[in-house]
Length: 151
Image (tube, rainbow, N blue to C red; front, side, top):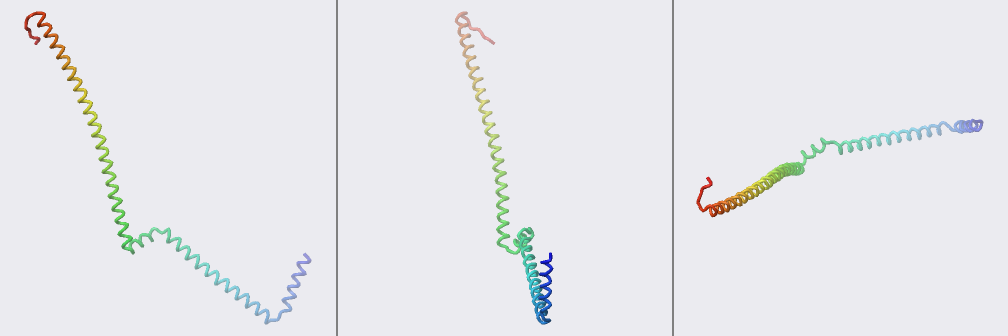
């Protein structure tokens, strides 16, 4: 603690030995440094404001809208892209609808084939039964020797 006080006293002695002119020069230097610091602080503030504006512009949705309105080529291209995307969506819906119809047609065709197959089997059974009946009729006719009607 004594060493700090003695050093402090030495500083006081150093200042006491300075002339008024040297003190004024020292004060002027401090003022110049202060004004330099103030200028740098103001410059940094301006830089920060510019950076904040750039960030805001990058993430500003209204800026994109304004840019599109100001540049007709970009605006027209964007409109064409939106039109193409809408047409694509419509085509996808149409394709989906057509696929559903095709699936339904395939099911109908399958069901029709099954129906035809079952009717053909039924017909084949009828033909076989008719042939059996004809054989029974012929056998009955030859065994009895007379013609008779079944109905």
